Image (tube, rainbow, N blue to C red; front, top):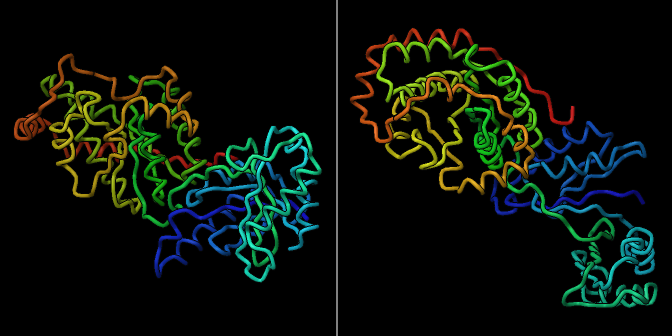
Length: 393
């Protein structure tokens, strides 16, 4: 029989009466991702998503890699199905896993029998198949405590399934079950990770980037769009709103005290981002801020920054160490692009001594020197919407 994938559901199994909603969304997301690699049948039974190729020209390796980035999956394995018969199971073990087994020092068999009509229980299946494997591969020792390889046998209602060790899935909840968010994407290491982490909770995302040409280059903009493309591997399709931010920053530079440049700039970003978020139907803003990392990310500064919006602001990285963030960026494939040396708007007109404990009334007094509404309107009028294609495209 053909090779197929078994994707074990994660948090979805904890859901109550609305579990079906999450399962249906997971099936829809999986079918959409698999469509790029051929024709696949996608079904859910017994807390497992079955992904089965319908013809021989499917790109199984490409599909397998894509499955690893689908939120809602706890663990996954490539397997082969066979008849629910000991001889058929053993034959499948030898044919499907024999090459891998022959290179091992030791093995054990783990069996699960969810079809209680099968005459042997899980322990008996493991003993029977394990004995036959030991005879077939005499140079591979049996070790039930610390084996170098585990043969897995699952006897289910539909068939018996044979596979090697499972690998972790992407975890989280299916994309599209948690609402929509607008992510402020700067081009650094942090914001793509923040977007990934909020998307992992089932949230669809749109991204907003503030672009200050000619102080920042076209390459800086291209870098951000590439980051967004890399993020689609996990987060799905998205739009990046590229905001022309130059006039805002020049107005702040020309009219406000230097130590307030950063905090006022951030407040303008939030005003503009909120307007764009509402236009997209997003219910919150997401930033890559990390408490205490830089001057604008102190508790006082973040409170003053957030005072200008009336929708929630989420900061998924708020308590993480920088090394944790870097590790996550490397895992999701954004790190190498994030560290390319192109400056973003946050480096423009940076004050030598920024306010780390700003007072809201004093910040508002500085902002009173500006025509805030006109500057926000101008930035929104100079916003370019860029549709981002899927990672695999």
